[in-house]
Structure formats: C-alpha cells, structure tokens
Amino acid sequence: MKFIIASDSFKGSLSSNQVNNIIESKVKEIFPKSFCEKMLIADGGEGTLEAIYGEGGNGYDKIVIDTVNPLGKKIDGYYLRKGNIAVIEMAQASGLTLIDEKEKNPMITTSFGTGIFIKHAIENGCTKIYIGIGGSATNDGGVGMLQALGWEFRDSKGCEVSRGAEGLGAIASISDDKIL
Image 1 (tube, rainbow, N blue to C red):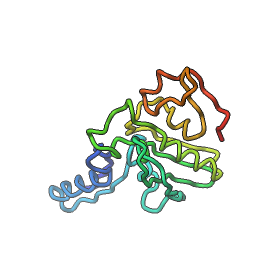
Image 2: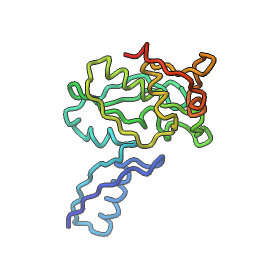
Image 3: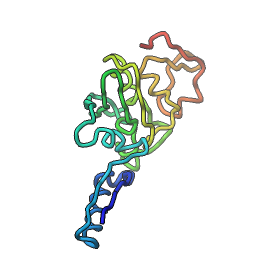
Image 4: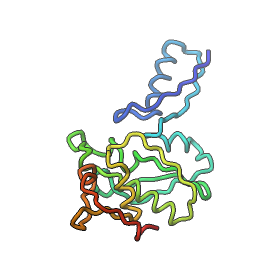
C-alpha cells in the first residue's frame, strides 16, 4: 500500500517535516509493508521556504543575512534566490515563532525585519520578489517593512512614528525621498 503524506506545520510546535515523520512512523506500525512518500507543504507561513527548497534546493540558493525579529532583536534569517527571483518568508523575520508568548503584542511588533530581506534582495539584483505572509506576529500594515526600505512615516509634529500598530494612528505624512 502506498501513502502520500503531506502535512503543514503545527504552528509553533512541529515543522511540516516533523509532522510527516510522525505520521509515517504510525502508518508503518499499522501497515509495516507500506511505502510512504512524504512532501513538505506550507501555506505561506513558517516552513514555506523549506518546502520550496526541498532536499536539493530546486535551483535556489539560501541567502543568509542578519535581520531583526518582530521586536527588533538581531537574528539570522534567510530567503531563497534563483537568478533575479527572491522568495521571502515573512515568518523568517516577523514570525510568531520568533518571540515568546508573553511578548506577542501586535501594537509593538513590526515587519521591519521582512523589509530588511526585501532591501537585501533588491540591492543584490532581484527584480521579482515573492513573499509568503503567513505566520506573522505583526499587524503594522507593512509600515515597518516600508521603513526598512527607506520610507518615512511622521506624526503631525514631524517626528517618526513608533514601529508597530501603535504608530499607525499617528501617521500624518509619508515620504518616499529616501527609498531605494
């Protein structure tokens, strides 16, 4: 008997690969002579890059860079590149799994780290960028991402608004004078 096993991750607890391996072990207990084919899948959130990259890379290179998590703490993350194409997973920099439960506050979390990925890809010749936006710990409407790209969001006094959703209501002007 042949089984095709394709599970998404269990957010914050098990990766797609881990879930697939558990299912395979249980199938083998019940059907010892079975053959299992496992496939990594994702919905745009955590694990998307892993599913695209697969075992052999599928022609993509992993580009590892310094970025920041949703609270602005420096972390390493990666995106995929093939020629002029970049594939970015928002969860790599702005994801729920990068912060503790007690730190999850969409009023202060930011998509700035995702913007760092985009900026790096553009500066290194990527002209097509695909972004998986699942698994985000942010609710800033992409303002943090745009700030990383050079956009300026100012309040009525001309001061830069705070990152995260709490700064959204204070935006009085937007400037693109410093974008790439």
